[in-house]
Length: 266
Ligand code: SF4
Image 1 (tube, helix red, strand yellow):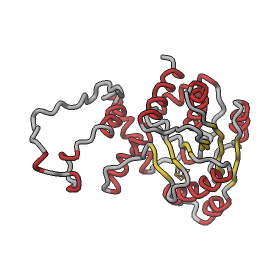
Image 2 (cartoon, rainbow, N blue to C red; image 1 turned 180 degrees about the vertical axis):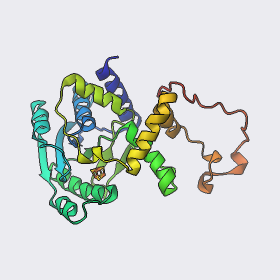
Image 3 (cartoon, rainbow, N blue to C red; image 1 turned 135 degrees about the vertical axis):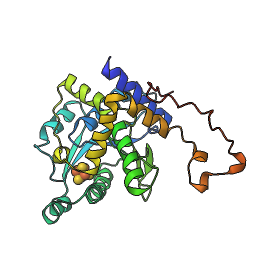
Image 4 (cartoon, helix red, strand yellow; image 1 turned 30 degrees about the horizontal axis):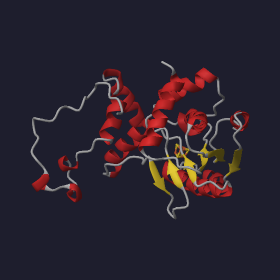
């Protein structure tokens, strides 16, 4: 399998399907130092050369005190690709780490999001690209179902609260197996976050459960993604989307939607 071709196809499909990138966009790519965001930047650069529209790219990294090694090597690599890279230390996040070392993801992400908007504003960007992957979408779906009572995941495209930025997630169809393989094939330096080693968290538990199910049912993640694109609101319990008069009984007729088979995104 040519990993780069697969990545180009999957990222291109996400961008096209959800109208992520438009002519004249200036996209600030959020690089965490890990394999996913650097892969995203590389693939966006390749797509930029082939795209029928003009858009520009820049990259930035927010330091929240959680990297396991200096991210300078990642920055140098990004600059070697011809992409300007900004490194920003977020002092409120560092203070948070001192004051509440065991703070959870909600607080950490809130601090990061505020810093991200500030940096993107300084970079004159109108779009911010995040490296959330198909794995992240699956985990988020289960986290919301199991712990917040919502059928919800990460949106492919949204806007910031005051509509300053379009927020895009070009890796929604890309698994981390692919980003890992791509980074290894190119020997790109990646700097993991300390949280990636943490055990016993909800996020880690869900990730391990999905990986465990996949040992018996390969392609489970693809089916979960497919399910997110194939909602049957009349068979759920949210009355906002429920109309018994236009809701035929299909009990016994519904195919198991290709469960545990390979699902291709049309
Ligand atoms: S995993 Fe770590 S870095 Fe990521 S949001 Fe949670 S606390 Fe922050």
